[in-house]
Image 1: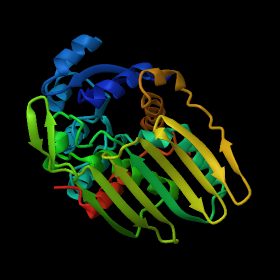
Image 2 (image 1 turned 120 degrees about the vertical axis):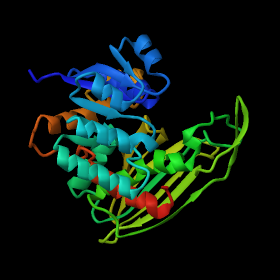
Image 3 (image 1 turned 90 degrees about the vertical axis):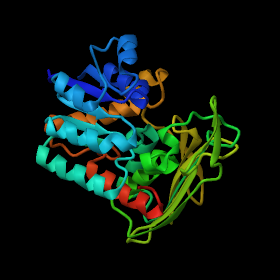
Length: 349
């Protein structure tokens, strides 16, 4: 039986809501510690985690860990990843990878020095519909691919929505919808095509700069809509939209070829159907469920996150087997590619 991986989590937001239950449900991980400047002690007491620390550095010094999930806010990723790599830990980092290209490059250099297994938390690669689309692409069923369409509409940043102030609404700290959501869209396009674009144009938009929470009004200097157009070397393009100010929640991810389209759509990531469309007919495609589908009751991100952990574990274990279509581990190099595109549309310090 493979050895247990002793792991610590940095961050008590997404780290506690998704990574913690996903890691505990996975048979290979033992969660030993959690770190956060404010909430670690409370979360550790509520969730029966043995150790709580105020920072990643304190956690690494205070207990023996094999791996670290860096789910701290984006402004802390650089320092937390570097500290974890210096300690010889395997690292899974949340997106956006960094605040800027220089930070991303520094983390890749540290990864090479450490020689440990590193990955990025683009768990949506492992959604059943995304895996099915990747199989269609790998088997040339959609060739020649001409256009990728990725549109995510949400309403959580409309003017009437009360949102708590904090780093998410501060550009200098990595806030905004581009880092949070456009990063997933960019990764989706690059992963489907297996390469980076040769040209990028786009823009970030802040429609509702004045916001309010329980304490009153405050000013946001981040984007609530992000839009990119990517051109690839073989004539394919990708149109990417994420907008938090829409009246409805809607998600569309489509691969348009000259002879066939595959379109995945629904209200959100966890509510999708996949169709194949050509000149003669439209067919709904049945997607194989995740082996971890039973854990979706925790939240919809948990099953694909557990699938991502499997790919990370293969790298940790030194498994040289080539991944199945759509199940390649998102790497730090992928994060740098995404960071370059985010910078081109205006994200970063």
